[in-house]
Length: 122
Image (cartoon, rainbow, N blue to C red):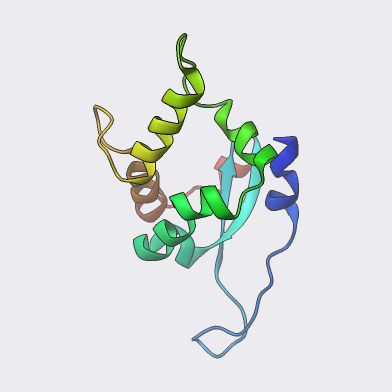
């Protein structure tokens, strides 16, 4: 995850929030083997989550090297591999069902519904 390390380790700017205290509630998550703190609203509010985890983020925010790194985790196809991966990315971000649901929708539901135990981060 070398190309994404800075995204996972750089502190987020914590500006004023609606609660008036100037701090956001952060939740610890494990992404692969890396522990990161993410804003609770990002994890629990589907509207915010899908505004961030979106095709426009993929196309306009991530660099070519970041997209290439993430594409390593997609299935590899013997013929027309890049074209089929691009179709897969479009299907993923458009909410298409992949046999048992859409992985992004499943992940967001798990983020929203799961309370991690402290032992998950040891």
